[in-house]
Image (cartoon, rainbow, N blue to C red; front, side, top):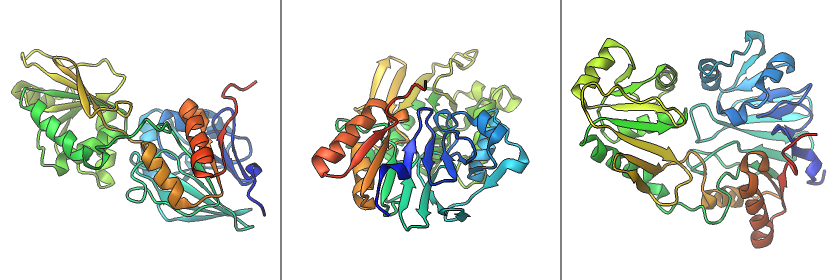
Length: 342
């Protein structure tokens, strides 16, 4: 069978379609639904899938996080998968691969009966390290930072640099770290690995997700639920890190007079960190590959065709696809061609 674009596609609602059986990170009628991780842009139309998909496939940690985020999957529709697991389908075999993004993130490698292999990366970083790179005839890749100007020269030492900054800011008083679910727990693990022992405080959702992360092997350590007697005692002492969602306006009770600092983590910064004001900083920490890492994945996978996810990557997906074709001579196409469905 030739490598043609009809073997894989992305719908205008963001569903990644491979083979005759799977719909990934979006809904399509009469198909098994895969959720690669528990972020909202990969749980698109999940209510429709709960209603009509035969099964919903995800890593066990993803199901647990989804439950905390208010997405309850009926038990008879849950299909838990582990890294390395293989699933036989009517037109081929699916293998579950590890992806470094957030807790529970997976990639899908679909090998058709014809022998053609199709990989959907989902969101990822650290290709060849925390993210596996299978050789594949067709790759469907994310490209959140697919523009050539999104390169982080400090990415190999960013964890150490983050720990250094957190240590520095903690010396001034309590610290608020704002990040997305999943990224928060990755950062907690990093800080513990670099010897930062300050207790963590978190709201209900962040606290519960962190306990799940600890169950799956991340180092979380001393973490307290905001509003409890124990958390109030820590607040009185004035040495702790409060983790909250990046969009949350929830701030700390400043009844004890300590001056806190806010550190917001984002992948969109091109410099390591910068001050917004005297007490607010942004730091360039991402769960996604930069442009160089995207190229590393593609070049090592040796595909004959690369489909770039434009539903989530937008203009950067178009830029990355164009670069692959014009600079590297790799056949590529951004999909879907239009985001709005008519």
